Length: 501
Ligand code: AHR
Image (cartoon, rainbow, N blue to C red):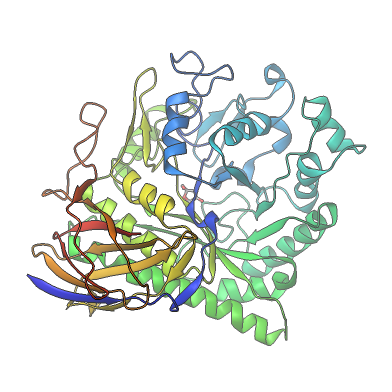
């Protein structure tokens, strides 16, 4: 059995955790909206056509923020198409995903759904094919009290009170050649700056996220951030990061080490933000919005086949990754990475929420079930609120293709406002249990309440509608805390939630 030690102190604070770090994402893509959250005629649909079983699954996850309506979709989207009488809304070809958007679900309907599941909306504006003017118009429509063209249009459409959307994305992945209206960093920085000024003149209380590179693997990563921030630094509040990981070669040890890359990515963007701050002699500090993160690769070939057969249908079953047990471990480690960087990462969105690279799956006309990745997210969202604490981890290390010295134990701790303590840790070791000594030196008397574990002997095990409980959490016996120390055994390849009161 391997040995490891984690030292925690209640004074080793990283930061207060912004609850928006547990956000997610619904795009008009595939069956996320149509056949996902919305399915009129389903036996469990409510009066608006929203599936109540899906809403219950979302509520259990605890998602305080949902990014909407895209993604790549937003770069060709006309927000006006999505409001007003449903029968009069146009059908549009969506060039992002080669489907037809019917606009049956639009801004008002989505706001009702978000209210029902207890989420705020993070709304992305189109800076691809459109510009600052349409961006300021939608802020006026959503947030202005009335007595102006667009706010009166909202009122006429049945919503007297403003929607009060506080958080806005200035476009999506504008550096990507796949994006409608792709821009250079300078072009984007200029347009983001002008849109930001006008949007904040309409509603000074809003916060804005500028597009960083669409991945740390983009050739322009770094230069993009420097150049665009040089143009818009003073008028924006957050820079976005997007990252998806894959394991096409079946190298589990290497796959689980990918959060080393995620951590480097975060630290690099922080450095660039602060370099621009220094260069500009600014007093303003930017924060990060990691507004797309997940595992994404299982469905890629399937999507190519779908597009060969049936482009332009409504709600094609795209990006329907079926997540296995090792994906859940990486998602757990990604959550640990976000919490460990809670001083600068204030917003994060698991991409996405339903059917499309999602923790929640549905069958049209049928059931709704939780994928493997649902569970670490639910645990982190439920028990990871309050203050993030730095865990000093003494762990065995391993080497893999991309990294040397990967700790087998990846961990972070959080302290709730009620004084409770939670340690999240992943044991990356493929075969061996780990004897973990938890040194809780400064917390006073503590009692272990629960040891939740997610483990499966098969890294490729998945949950399906027929077998929804193949990969589900269980509990292990709690251990005593003696002289401020607890000795805990972590199964090999496991996600662990150690809860103390
Ligand atoms: O989340 C799926 C897609 O991934 C989003 O539309 C896009 O922003 C990213 O490339």
